[in-house]
Length: 71
Image (tube, rainbow, N blue to C red; front, side, top):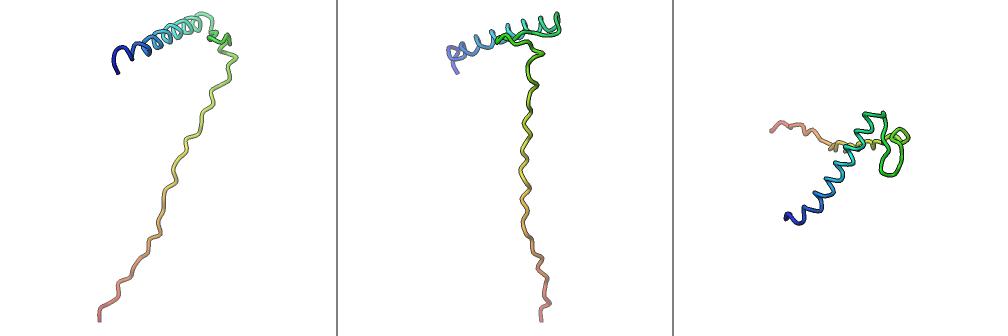
């Protein structure tokens, strides 16, 4: 990416850092913060964690070949 293309993302990152610092200052002072939508942090629903899907082990049928004596 060129510097011009990165500029947009740098501005977004700077705004997010300012928001974070503001919310953390309020959290330290009051024990809660009010987010950008005006919702108190203690009223937000807890995060929902999605279970991790594990791939099933693939099993193969193995056959044992018995050796026959040579005559």
